[in-house]
Every structure is written in C-alpha cells, then in structure tokens.
Image (cartoon, rainbow, N blue to C red; front, side, top):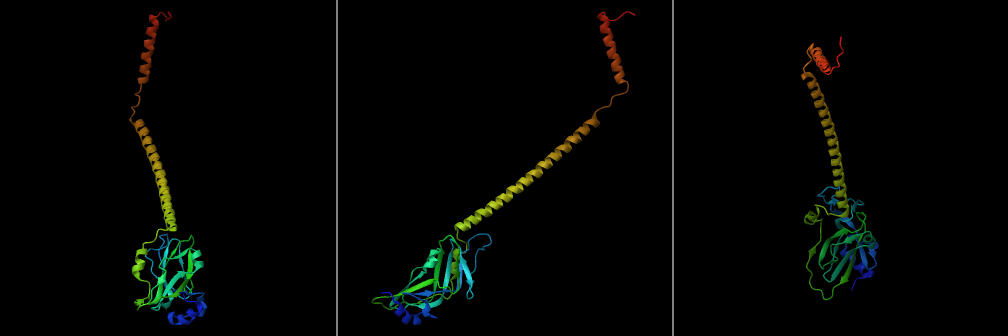
Length: 256
C-alpha cells in the first residue's frame, strides 16, 4: 500500500535529507536538481565533443536539447527502509515538454544516498532546468513480509563510465540538420572557389593565346623576303611583250 501524506510527513524526516513539508505533493514528495549534471553533446557547430560534467551553483541553469540525454543528480539524499519500496518519476509539466525518465522507475529496499536520474528529451524544443528546481517525484509503498534488505549505496557524483558512451554525441535531428547545413556551406564555398579558379584559368589561356598569335604574326612579317629593285618592272615588261605577240598573231596590231 502506498504511503499517504500523513505517513510521508511522519516518516520522511528520517528518510530524506533537508525534509521540507512544503514539498509533499499528495501521496508523493518532490525532489530537486542537485549540484552535478551531464548532458550529451549534440555534434552541432559550437557544441564541443567530450563535454565535461557540469557543477551547478545554486540557481544555475542548464539545457537538455531535443534528442539528447542527460544525467541529473538529486539534491537530496534518500533512504528506503527494508520493509518499503520507492517509485520515482518526472513531474507532469516536464513530461509535457518532452522530458522522459529512462533511468528506471523504482528504488529497492535498503537504498541510501542520492538518486541519479537519466533523462531523454523526446520533444522538439530545449528543456531548461536549474539547480534546486523541483522536477522529480518519489512515492513510498509498504512491502509485505519483507526480509533483510541488501544495503545499496547511492551516488555521490555522476560515474564517468556512464558519460563515456555519450561523449561522442547523439545523432539527433537537430545535430543532423546542423551537419547538413555545415556540409552545404562547405560545398557551396568549394563550388565558388572552383568557379573562380576556372574564370582565372580561362582568362590566362585567352591571354596566352593572344600573345602567341601576336608573336606568330610578327615573326611571319620578319621572315618574308623583301622585293628586289627592278623585279616588278622586268615582270611588267615581259608581260607587255607577251600581250603584244598575242595581239599580232590575231591580227589586232595596227600598222604604223
């Protein structure tokens, strides 16, 4: 049977650090964002890979982009008695924004320490959170005929073995769109550079062809032999004699 508000108010001061009755929410208790978070890199320009875990000052904020994972350590340390079982979730308002709890939904008997929530942003927009923001819920329920519980330690910080697989980035739609835009820009810049190089090459070839043609015509003018004096007159006299002989044979020559 789940613990009601009265039992939570009676038992939780012994089970939750810094218990605040104002955090009682019906049959649940609100837990808040702690001092350490990690969000997977998007792979977009300006978002570095291998991001480090972030230490949050009180009130400091962070963002979980669409399609990305996050690890969030709780501010409170909680304890689950041997004869109880706890259930955890994200508050409805954050679910409506797309934030999903993927870390599991229960806490075993014997657990003691901070909780580590693994979340995924399945929505289309960034989800903004900040330290001490009360975005998680915990319920307690009795366990019938409970035996001795195995002690399970909570988290003092976010383990590096959890963040390592995410350090290479998650290929979300936003990340793919950024890569496509970056590739398109590089391709456009390359095409522009090739067109510029082609224009310069055409101009250079045209200039070279003009120079070769000019030099060729000039060389032809130098190599052509000059007419010798009297050659034209001799040629003309010979032609006149040939014409006169032809006219005489044809009886066209007038008598003197």
